[in-house]
Image (tube, rainbow, N blue to C red):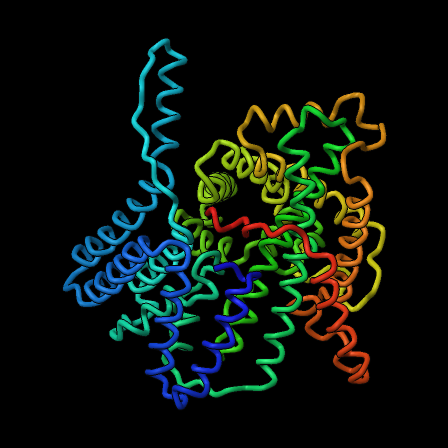
Length: 482
């Protein structure tokens, strides 16, 4: 069930009405409703993978209790490893088995040994990387005595499978979400309206910007040999905006939807394309994943406490694992490696935490240095996205080679050129609104709140009209594949 589908437009108000009115605001009934609704939401993708979700939930629920009740550190560690091995085992089989088998066969072929590897013909369960990391964060926090185990299986199941975040995050923490699930929730009109406003902006990002950019990004990447260098540049830019608006649009809808039910989810994006360096970019892009790797991998590896070389090693590990988390393809690993190389100068010089505040805070325009830094960081990120989007490494290098050819300075030439101009104009307007609202949780959080009601509602209706008039061809959310 897509957030931008008619079925979700029917599903959401029904669940909302039952949640606040039919349950009589009884916490237990509300949580049961959320769980049933979440399982129905997930089953709409493929009901067969429901069993995997339920098993994963029960596994971490049970091992979490055993970790807490363990009589000594050795037993505690054993239960932790049972959870980690089984969780990562499922993830490895469904997501990485074919990759490892294929890579091993390719390696043998280079040595002149031909094999016929057996691969699995299975569909990747939607959201498996996300709900697996939900469960792992829970058992890790229990092992570190940061939390107490959740004895109520319904409440724990809602934590794992709450439908707004189930298939594409944000990756929640038990320390943040479980207390909200346990406590009584009262309807807050102001929060609900704010949630609807964030949903509206998320839909605009997804339907108007991401889906339209996807049409041209797909056209150029899928037939890259047919286009000149300048068109390749546009293709990279289209995908750069597609992936941001697609994923941050999903996150906006998820956060806004959760707020309708009185629940606050972790923020996942903080205007990353206005970053002044790659370190700042990664503090603002997919925040829940970056912080997950920091807390559960980077710091346990020693973080930056062991000296500069330990920090460099751990940074490379984090980015390579992050790349591999995104997909079973060498393109993602190179993408992660490239970002690690990008961030190295700031790690070595100790300037990786220089830009902690949003750029030009309290001002409308950045200074020349800030503007130059933003443009440079944006172009570096856009170049790295080529590997993220490419089918394989050969495709990525061919794309870059064609982009840097002598035709780079010729005019772009491809079908639907004028529609592409319209999409670029819409993207420019979108980025202007994002810039104006960059100090808020999302771009239109405070936009127009002090305007006369007629003008404010006119803005909302203008966004709604734009969604219907300029909607692109429906595309599945990019991060569903992860």
